[in-house]
Length: 432
Image 1 (tube, helix red, strand yellow):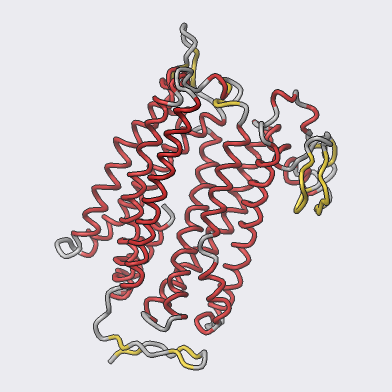
Image 2 (cartoon, rainbow, N blue to C red):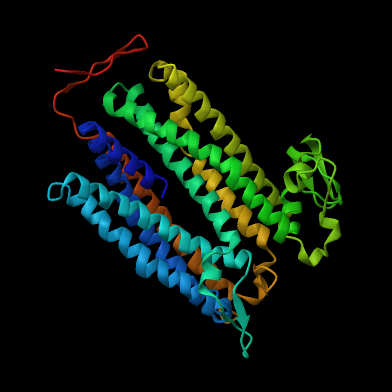
């Protein structure tokens, strides 16, 4: 999903400037997108089947609500994305330039629409709205638009998609840095670095700024126990923001803390002296079930998000000074940083799902009441290990195919002669 808007940007610049370099850059990244799409489908579909296998009680309880968004994701968004991806990949020579641009935009729109339906499903589990309880104890939808416009979904979606764009931007910039450092595909490498860095600056600021803050306000209002656990904040008082430290759940404290005084109070209530509810003000039965893991996942997410912003801002400064392509140490930073957004996004989802515990549907259905009672733990372990093995093989195949595309490189642009980089000076590619 993070690559989709960047591909549209490349196509837009190519159409606007009538520059074939950007069209070929978009074509190169469309191949990477296509590989990711195929593996996303293969790995994602089995996850939905788990609603009916490992979580049958949850499906029976909440199917009347979540079935709406899950069905719409598959019926509308997935087919829109897949159909236009085929046109984008194979229809360029048969379509006009503008028509081909619209196919790329439709791929972007379909992938982000798909993301919204999935996020809306999870947001309902985080903050259930627009439902009513039936005679058999299950829930059913009372307002379709109430489900889709859940305030939690809007902020969660914005935060998630900004994080996805950060990932796409870092990957694009990393491939461009690799080409520049290896002195091949220099023209395309510069385009990848430039678009990746500019997109990364915008997305990383959005992750920390309005979207991260908005999601934090959601937590403060609807899941205060989760917020307290994320900061290992045990006592109700004026709260510091913990930068580093180890949560000591047994002693209800933080060991070796490094904090910003009163900062959490300001972030939560916009008042430096306000009190923030601690975990001790909630029954322990309402505490997240793994506070330490939640704390570390949250701090990894926030810490990496701050690093992303700094790396991209520094790269943007060098780009504005026209020195980024020759600053090899910074190109190495961009190259080696590309796995970190995947770690940050995973940590972010762990934060969201661990924070919701001990509930499967927050405040309504506990996790202990949602799993399939007839499925033994041994069966769950067997299928889990099986899927882990299958996904590991698919991951190896995915990396192999992506590496092959990167090594093959973008299509050469006729009329462009690529010059080598000597002594740290980048000689711009020139037209014959």
